[in-house]
Image (tube, rainbow, N blue to C red; front, side, top):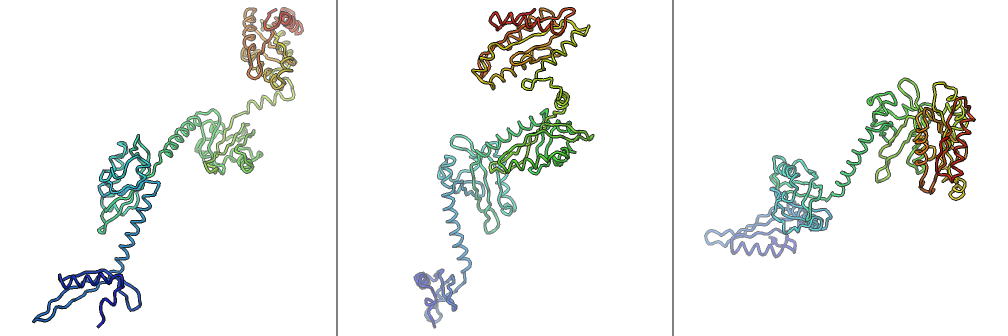
Length: 492
């Protein structure tokens, strides 16, 4: 005996009255309203009202059929709210959000399409997205869209593809996430695509690839041993020079810790580098012994460097090993003899005299001579520029004398700015050319120091001469040049 309107929420009362009116006048009325249950909860109900005409003159009746549609209404409203939120996010997203029909035509594009790529969304509505794709990437994009349209295309979830998209003034690299949206039957209803401009990242990747290729070429062709290590010190990749140095194959080295090929009495270089990294450093440089396959040791100049990423995390280590065994053996032989000048590494005057005496005593050696070289106005240069500058001039003088001297000649520093070269097997004309060449090589401007010149005197050995005789002739020839103002040469 209660009225149906008494069960309906007040917000739906007008809809229900309209449904009754429609049923009385047209035979059928319909309303979707909330009805209150006994427990007080409101449920969405689909109410269909029909007019049923009475027989035998009876008055017509209204029959109402109520169907519970609460779950479906809530689902539809949630979907609508979700879509509204999606559009709101898409319209304000930095990335470009696209909605495509199953054929790949544009239904919707977020406003960022214009700010990012210069295309107005309303101008492209209905256009196939492939019209914006670079020709070289078109096949990949078309294959992806075909896969989404194919059987079970909506069941595989998101796809990712990096490709190029037309920009208003060229092409941009983008990374696109493709999400298929299924219809109730499981077919493809539409495609949601989120596109992000990654041109800067791609450019960085290409630059990194080029740098890595350059590093690979330098790595593989380097004459010194090189290896890339994991942060904990395991050899990841080694070059041929390191294999030769260690006497082990690439397969035997890669995967092993660096510690396994260093001398057990030496500290672990990886541990020592870790200490330096903790203190703010990034590199370790020291002399180190390397163990070879045959059990022998090689002295190497080791440089171990940490390579970090943009977050300062150590990505890997790089080690360079330069074999210094021969130099070390030579240094050991010379140590204690004190026959070389510590600054310039030239021979001392004692060594020059010993070699000169041996040359004069050898009956098979001819053309023995000593070329004296003296730097002009060196004391004045020292007062004006200081010892650092003059030391540089002294070292440079020895280097250039060695460059012009013969392989068996001896370059010596007699003291201060006084040098000598012991020559053998040269006649008078050759000594003239050698003196001229030395004068040109040692005269000129030295960076950070200024103009430098030398005076050169050459003394030749004669039958029966001793060491003092040859040295005195060279001194006499040098004096002639000095007295004439310097910056020249004379051959006795």
